[in-house]
Length: 591
Image 1: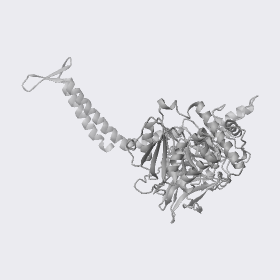
Image 2: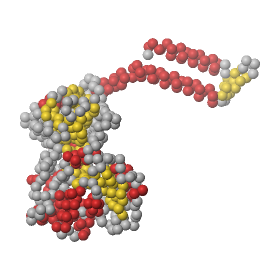
Image 3: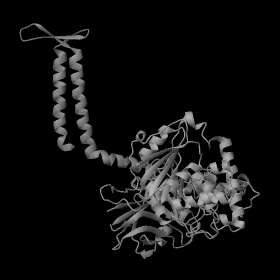
Image 4: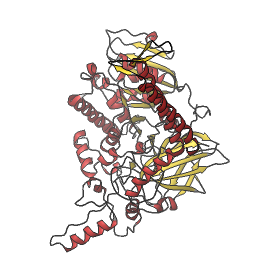
């Protein structure tokens, strides 16, 4: 910038000289300036021309000056601002956090193609035609779908394939409203071995990842839902699905089961409440964000909306459970008697990644073993919900679910409901075997010893894991959007201290306010403690919460380059810890 300063000085002097000369030879008469021409006659010069030209010239000069100044000094200035903010927190400069770079695999031909044309999508149509068209546009490009079958339950409306702009669409205009059982009848009519069911008021974004897991375990009904419903179905009751995959054989079996359980026509119409129950297996559920397609004109009259719709659904769920109970008591061969593998506790696939190119895996269960509660046919669904909630409140998981670790955002996190135990792991399923060099990125807020004691394991599609060397690089990063004042030293001292006598308390999450400012600095903290100890009525110094956001993260990266192809990666904890998993982001990219 110094080398060019004399040029800017010359330009500035020239503009100043010309401006002074211009105004000194002019006289003002309202909005006009006059000066003599070479012939001695006055020439008019309008402010409307001179002033805009002058302003434009100054503005261009300002832009050039700003660009050159920013080029030479801008990054230093920004770093100084960051440094001042970090210095106020008690630390030297560190780079602000950025979203973990997952790279671009668009041109790398790394999309799984297994299961192409082996599934029929089943959609029911009632009144949300525009939402239905939007869903068809979303489903049509997916290569897993051989057909998209639309069952129209609205008798007074006639639908045609050409209305949806997709060659895969087949429309069946029902002569009567068959309610929910229509989807199972449509599946029985399909020519593919698998069926995908979806309601017309939701859009499921993570079809490829859910389908990849379904192909591994087609013996289970696979569903996709949000954290609130996931907590219901995996803890309080297990009968609900928003988007689901099932085999055609299981659907045909259900239709046979309906005949042996003496379902009346009305119960048969509400088939959704019976299908998953009659399977007698806990559905394999994935949890993530769902997009609701809201139609205010139609949603008020939607079948399952409102308290009356939910109460009716629970009533039929209870009836379905009673019928399944009776069939199992008499050992009806149409009903599965044993839990299939992988069992509920053996499953580790949790949530799809935000880009639908991986799944987060973990053996860490949010809730206790549901098998401790024995079903009794005289207890209705709402009472069962209350019993489970009193034993274990699911609100912590609903707030910090697995999907928050793979949503591509730094400020949302998965936080486990229990402390880390030796052997607990967290990792990724990349949906297909890869023979390239992969860099993994992990953004978390846990004690330093976790990554030091962890071991790295990889596996192919057979899910047989082997340990490989783990070489990682980590750094502390600061969330510049964080408004608190907890320093990095305070966080490290809390997470890395000895925990011999510390009892992990998940209720710490509720400690959002303290009696004093614990996050000023260590001297202030000690001073407050001394004051409290010397007072007549001392207060107990509150513990920092494991669930609290300190504004600091640890960002680690490590590379896996195996000679043989691998699909799964997991980091396995080497020892018991007193803190939970707190993972803000987990991703991968091809190097």
